[in-house]
Image 1 (cartoon, protein in one colour):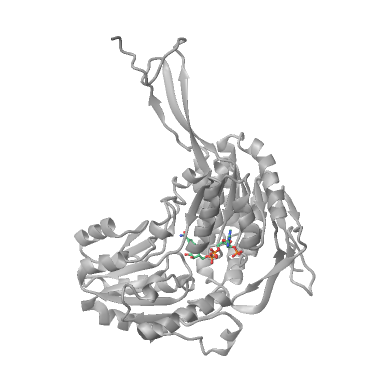
Image 2: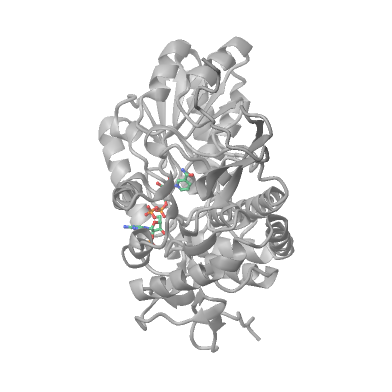
Amino acid sequence: MPRMAPSGERTDATPPTFRHFIAGEWADSTSGGTFESRNPADLSDVIGRFQGGTAADVARAVRAADVAGGLWRRTPAPKRGEILYAFGALLAQHKERLARAMTREMGKVLAESRGDVQEGIDIAFLMAGEGRRMFGDTTPSELPDKWAMSVRVPIGIAGIVTPWNFPIAIPCWKMMPALVTGNTVVFKPSSDTPHCATLLVELMAEAGFPPGTVNLVTGSGADVGDAIVDNPDVPVVSFTGNTETGRRIAERTARRLKRLSMELGGKNGIVVLADADLDLAVDGILWSAFGTTGQRCTACSRVIADRPVLEPLLERLERRTRALRLGDGLDPATDVGPLVNIPAREKVEGHVEVGRRDAELVTGGRLPATASLGRGVFYEPTIFAGVAPMDRLAQEEIFGPVLSVIAVDGYQEAAIALNQTRYGLSSSIYTRDANTAFRAMRDFETGIVYVNAGTIGAETHLPFGGVKATGNGHREAGHAALDTFTEWKSIYVDFSGRLQRAQIDNQPA
Ligand code: NAP
């Protein structure tokens, strides 16, 4: 017997149909329309059908979130934290099931899917603890018999719009801080990963989030995303996705003076200096460039190599890249899974065509020849050498398994090349010289800097995000995440029993 999800219906002949989750109930869309989610490793494998949401569905979800918000914001934060804790424990219990569902739906290899779920667990536990911290300031007053303090207060309903590449981690990074601080949420996942989102929300309901605190509306960015962004009763929006989508959302939210947190694209570089441990660097580059098939916001797409090590580095990168095995991420022998969908592969192919004209193809640059891979959206891990810092290959986010190698002379040139991009998410340097490492930490214009490690692998308890066109100054994770979802309220208590005038010259003349 197939497992019957509370949200889905299944007959043996047809894939299951899943629903929105609004006010604690699984609900059909007012449109009556649905869309499919398919396995990118085998496009004939249909995971399910999902509701094609509408503005009316969003309006229902916002009403539910509004009703639930009255009680939720007055629930003591430690009690809210206990529900987050229960959710984290459930995620841990269901980690393997969720990881397998993730690999099936968006393709990343199983070990990485497990890591994605683990990030969800980690942020749930971290934010559960915030229920008992959520510190404000208690300060002396400038006047006698008076106290002064500041507290965080929730903003209201948070619109959560997420991409497909971290389909459990990113929604958790957003929803956990939003919820523990007393907001309610309307969540729109990517149309490439609605199944992961549904499984996540099922567990949130099971953990005990009251009806209406968490609402899921599936459907396209144009229909559901826009409706969330434009809804006047959603005062804060947290968005992760590409920079162009972010720019459009920023324009719309600005008109309504909304709070907006954005985590956007990247063009992350690894600098390898002449004194680097080359084998260590190659390990880090391969993991960062081809992990998640290059579809991480922190993926390394540029290697900036000091000329004395260029040739040996290229030789090792080529040899190791040719040995990577493509396949279904559920197969333990697989190193690199498929791309998420056909448009993603077409985008990669377009960039490779540009690379063939501007640079030197070292390896890859084509569809794999293996017949069984023809059912999925695979592309060979690709390396270009002879790339100049301002070439399109080195400037545009490709979001696929394409690595550009740029040659430079020494640290100064490397730092200039690294910063010559409009993005600023993650960067790395391989060197054995402590002084140079510290110069890089100071000079690299990115939100995250690694030393002697790849560009991926951020930990939940430090702020995560980027500078320049990678974002708008907000950060996820760590205690910085609380800033997105709270307002500061400053409170003064005067117990002198008389009129005391602050900020007035009280000194006798
Ligand atoms: P995307 O195309 O921008 O989509 C992201 C989300 O926005 C999806 O849910 C999408 O819905 C929705 N959306 C699209 N148009 C919208 C609109 N007009 N209004 C509101 N919502 C809209 O990005 P993606 O392809 O899913 O994700 C890849 C991108 O995310 C890359 O650029 C990557 O670098 C970035 N990313 C950044 C970080 C970070 O922390 N900096 C982390 C992960 C990913 P539908 O797709 O369902 O239509």
